[in-house]
Length: 281
Ligand code: PAF
Image 1 (cartoon, rainbow, N blue to C red):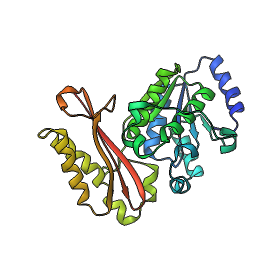
Image 2 (cartoon, rainbow, N blue to C red; image 1 turned 90 degrees about the horizontal axis):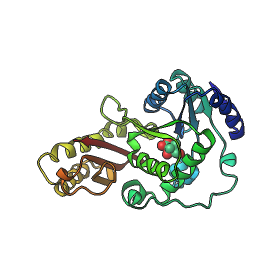
Image 3 (cartoon, rainbow, N blue to C red; image 1 turned 30 degrees about the vertical axis):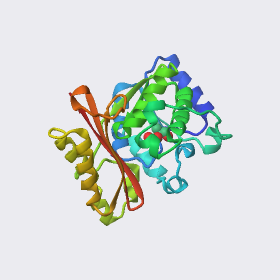
Image 4 (cartoon, helix red, strand yellow; image 1 turned 135 degrees about the horizontal axis):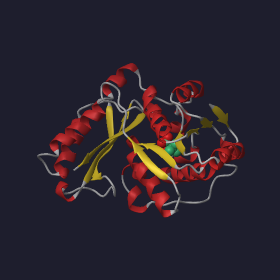
């Protein structure tokens, strides 16, 4: 695997692949890689001739400085995972090279960011959109891969690609879970031994919501799921939403929607975790 820090060197390497009409897949990450990421690299490697991963902890998408500071950084282990998963190129730029000065552009995704992550992390999707657009411009891949765990991020990026006419297919890849149901996340490694045992309650809350949705209207399901989480004293619920899986509009009548997403964010031991389940009819 070739490791490159300089965007211009990456552009010149990729030019060689492009002239040979190689199909290229990009997997943007912030490092601290786990099996969930590995599945993205494997899907990209199967669908493209060349897979490029990026590792960049993007400061402008963190609205909480403590979260940024505590974000795990595990480059040596990441390189091993990337090599095993069949990645060809790692782009790992410095902050100075990506942001010689703080970007002034502001991106607003309207109704797509009025709830959930957009509501609770002001400016988050502005930061995500800027870094992803920069990576798209540098790499110019045919395909780009994102995890469904960050469902709202996937929808926002898909919208950006449509609105700005990027010639890139955006692919959402399934959530990879631990044996006890916890969605894999770089943040899981910050959980203590005891709190790690509680973390699967987040997925249990989603499963409960899914089951209840067969019998009760969404407003009542939301109440019951909130009660379930409130009974787990260590968990502090930030949101539980039942939303249309494409527009993220709130679901009032299940029958009116083809796809429904149950989405949750909760704090556990100072770690913010998110998860979701998609119900497609
Ligand atoms: O999902 C992530 O890891 C980040 O939000 C992304 C897409 C790499 C942008 O920094």
